[in-house]
Image 1: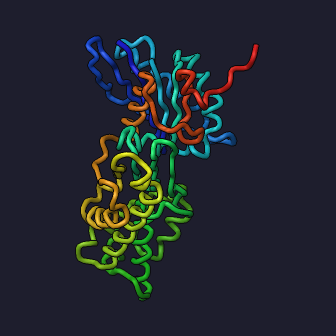
Image 2: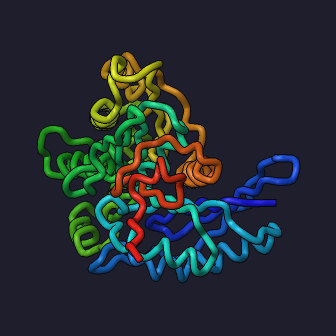
Image 3: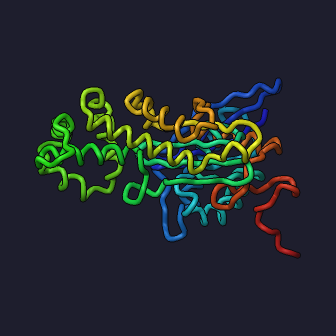
Length: 341
């Protein structure tokens, strides 16, 4: 048997899964292993050494449990890779070659693995949304990105954005200003206590985006009977559709119909968000077909590793989006140069 390893590195730690190809070419995935600690960042970006410390024992356990002696390929998808990936590109290939014998490696932004998990190697757009939000699209010649700038500068339509808008409406009702929502004020005080204490609770915290996002389900719960809450979700839907439109290739730019998919925990809010969102997508992306996401970012990492192992990975290579080494020479556009002897 042989196997490939898919890795997802995010704010809650590492997840790793081994995809095993048996003697009859039957594919199966192991149950994922999870670490309890996020990979650190430092002056050089994401700390490659810290990632290796966590990943290597997990990989060895997965390989031993599955009876795998070698890995055909590995993909690491990492949050923050686009702007913080220098250390990973510099140090991870040699470290994984030394520790696990890896010869084919893909390093990817988590938006790329989310895209591949949702749509595979097809043109279109994927919006990945939870606490934050990013849209990724491709026409199979280049990657496009929209938003993903964090809760202070962007992530419009995200869980943190919806939660903040809901708390703003609650405080407007508390003050007697226009645009306020008494139902949201009641739910906010049930969650966080008296409204006057909210700044003291929120501003000192390092997990402010998560705290804001925790209020987003309350906005959805009020939307049916509260026009202010419903308007917040309608505006979030317009932001999400706008991000998708910004990255989705136009119909004339690709052969065949572009697809658009949604992935991430935000969309578990259900109809209060999804109904206006479907309408907004139909209005802003009439040429793109809305499809359900096939899988999550970890599934996307596995898919990239499988295609890399089989020399059939056709996605665009861009250093800060999808960086690949160990391909056939004709495809090895961004592999490190081998010094002359």
